[in-house]
Image (cartoon, rainbow, N blue to C red; front, side, top):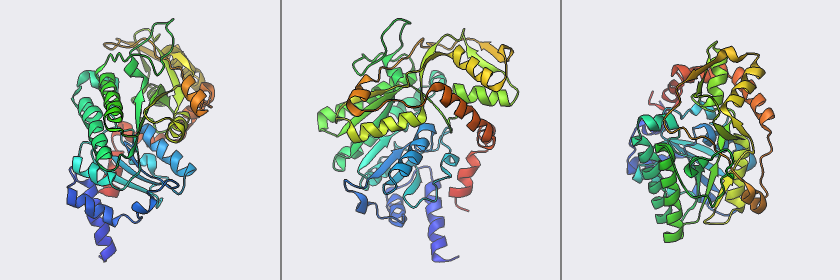
Length: 379
């Protein structure tokens, strides 16, 4: 085994460790084959993207590297159940991209990484409402404590520019006739998940007002598109139908959500980062208010099935009735608006899931976790 192979094996071993130490992280950064510091300037950015192996984060990384090919990205992800490195296979050998397995709650690791970046985009979060109902502990730990840890590191390393990804669920829910959420809507979270995200939003704003940390926040509506973990409504229903199973609908299926394609969302995040006013929040919505039943019937029609494939199940506790976003501020200040119609987006998403069955079948079987062990563990 030559010297380079030995170094690579050491790096793989460090990446696979659950709790990387300060010295190990320093060693790891020394071995990264691009000079992070040389890119800390206005023209070329070095990004720390947290949660970049998840659905939205992995789409964002691919989007950013395609649009800004001279920028550098460090992807910090703990690889919990929803983190999947196969989402990033297309760019894993890009010399401008590096993955580090780690926890945003790891103070030493985050502090070291923060010294080498000039922009943080925080996607890292526990996000599934049903899981938060079963147990809220990890939601508070990651979404609140993890965000605070990132903010502290950004503050202590030269006030690194910080963009925080949040959700419309922090605003509570709406009746059928209520006006859509705006940036001025009072917070009213109704699940442990949305309460933890609301807490993180408040912390981000507090670091702006208290420490002048240059932050922005975006609150988005329901995302859909490629690489979405198949416990979420759209990929769950499509993959179930491919497998010959029924699609489960909570209650009567009349709950309403505003849907935005992940590509539109990431273009909105890009606009906020480059054009948004520091300290401000921007709501990013798709302008597609649909009931769960409408979504279901659209998927069934597109895939050639009828209502016999629907299975009604007991509604979940505290199920919010309606979410809707008014994205006028982003449109007026940033010149952003969603481009992908729901009809086009859902058709493309169904086609993607049909053409990428190997990807989601591994997830449903749990085999996708073998990819990390194969490529990043010590062989």
